[in-house]
Each structure stands twice: as C-alpha cells, then as structure tokens.
Image (cartoon, rainbow, N blue to C red; front, side, top):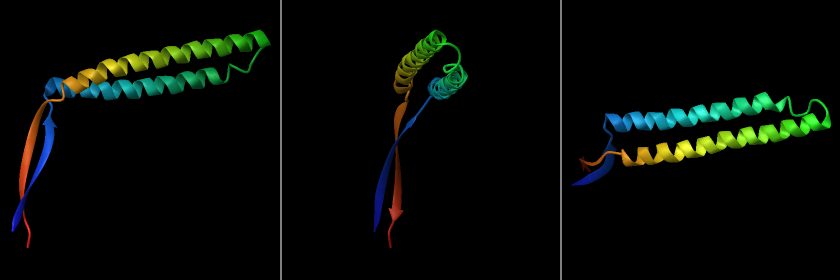
Length: 99
C-alpha cells in the first residue's frame, strides 16, 4: 500500500530573492548599529557633571529612539515587499510505499 504526501512550497523569482536578502541584511545591519550605538554611549553617560550626565542620557535616548524608528520603518517596508514577492505556490507530490 502506498500513500501520497503533498508538500506546499513557494518558489521566489530573482527579484524576490534580492528583496528577501535585503530584508535579512537590513535587519542584521540595524542590530549591529543598535549594539554599537549603545556601546559607544554607555561609557559616556556616567561621566562629567550632573548637567552633562543629563544631556548624555537625553542624547542617548534620542539616538536610540531614532535607530529603532528607522529599524521599524525599514522592516515594515522591506517585510511587505518580501511578503508580496513570495512567489508562486508549488505543490510537490511524493509517493511513499509502505510495507
């Protein structure tokens, strides 16, 4: 007796692959920028007078918020493009013989 197993996959075109890799690279790049930004600011926040510390904290917050906003906007735009260029559905049928 045999049974048929159907697997549903999508096949991306060349533009879809480029957009998918742009999405992945963008997210990795933004993560690196966020970590580097936090590392660069982390040692400067506790230095100086009280006014300098307050200014450094406010600047760090604004900078981090800007990085997160760019990250969110880019992820939404590239994510939608990645979703829309997913490609056509391909159904693969396999026959499995059972003993």
